Image (cartoon, rainbow, N blue to C red; front, side):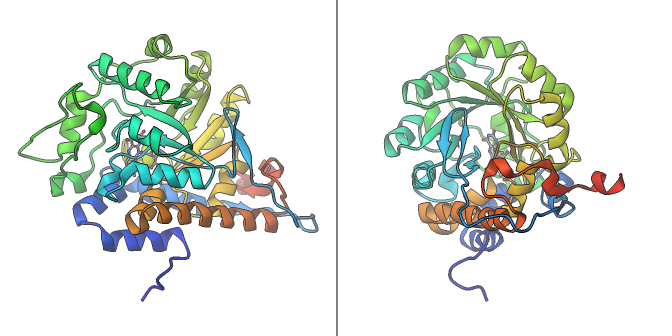
Length: 362
Ligand code: FNR
């Protein structure tokens, strides 16, 4: 039996599993098709080892950093994940308050269950809005403008989702979509399908699969906020993203919920970092469950990371307090990793502090 207070993210996951209806737990934890990439996102970290230095003064460790000019207490931010009210009745408001308490940045999902106005008025965390471009472009544009008016600081364009990946648990469970309050009065998000996942039916009805690189121009025409592009996995797309002038790149495979058999994000990170060549910041998400994982991502060139499922597990298990605990645990784990590797600040974490499989072959 598990102690009442979880000591790591995996124990929070187990608590979440116990506290959620199966349909919702499966929705949050699952990936696409064979879930090969889902396992890889986590396991690929275990194939990277440390190359630590000794006898460095680590009596004071500074984990603070900046992202788009915003100071945050550690390089751990909150990824956009849909429908937090399925995890906890306070939904994204609880998550946002935890972000504020941890002095970090939250990316609010476009598919949230609290409105941008509710989230804005309930906390003073730095917030970015994640964007899906709908066939009804006017609806997406209105959301972007509402976010801008309500003090959100950047737009995170999710670019890996022309269609929703096949998530077989959702198909089997006939996953239903909750109320998406942001869209009330704008567009009906109610779908009824007699077979399969309602979430998938919703996405195929709404998402604009014609979205392409030229539409970054359109996005720039409707907002002055900086634009980050989320879902980059290749050097080809990294170069295009820099060319179209985005303010940052997020290496992500959508938590392995889209195309199965893409590489683990930690395996794709370095290719993107090398292609970008420092022209814009490279951020990272996917499979982070330990502070050691965060250190590895920073060593391979990420400026900071986002966590998706760990936040939901914290929220489901213990609400705002749980999200806060998850972030604090990862922060504590990162701190000890830095100390034992001989890094007293995040800028000390270098490529020379880790060994990948490829390094070992050479
Ligand atoms: C997501 N993700 C996601 N991404 C996005 O851009 N918009 C969204 O609405 C969602 N929704 C969503 C729901 C759930 C339940 C999950 C697990 C993920 C992807 C998310 O932003 C991020 O890329 C991954 O969650 C990162 O992987 P980990 O940390 O969950 O392993």
